[in-house]
Length: 136
Length: 136
Image (cartoon, rainbow over all chains, first blue to last red; front, side, top):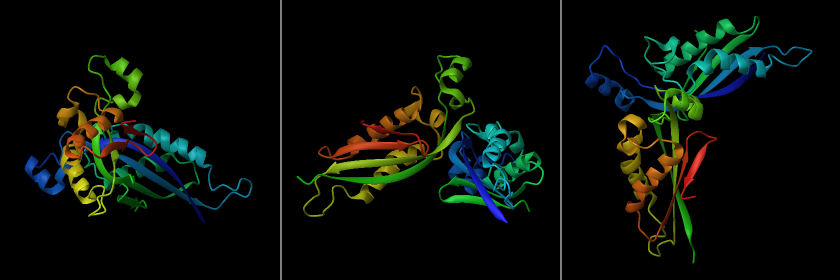
């Protein structure tokens, strides 16, 4: 079994804000991440698929094709966007990287070719903060 | 003489858009592309402040980097971190927050606070691949 990872980037605005709470409670829980006018990040997404290399190509899967799939079903929806306002799969959800990574997983899995297994996603919000999701 | 450059690196996360209010949406999109998203996008900005001078014979410092760090936090990070540059920052009320303009603003905020006999230069990374310096 070989694991191959493609890294993509997107730059986006977001805020951590629960509309059911007062502004004070949001600030208490989320601090400056609750700024109502948003803030932003250069996000980095690691997409890892797994499989056995094809004997003819040596590929688990052509990562150029994987990049195009990630671009069409994920990056084009979120790059240079406002994650709270512009992204259909984040509507009604808190815009934490925990929820973003699960949303990205659900975007990718139905659009991967048959036989290609998504192993994990890793999403960096900053160089010091990232989440990992295995689809559980 | 022994002129030495000292550097301090700091980060801030902010939302922005590139948008000229005198143009219509189409012209803004034509010039700025997806950076003109009216709902903003964002970046993890990295600021590198360079101070050049002759080390003080008593301290061995060109400038105490703890003092420089506190200065950057007070004058820059507290203004811009987790903010919307277009909406929250008076410096960009009538100035497009391109990396170029942000860098010039940062320089102008720091220059009066640093001894006149020390040279100052600011480098600002908007992404890993796009960065600006002022003065050039």
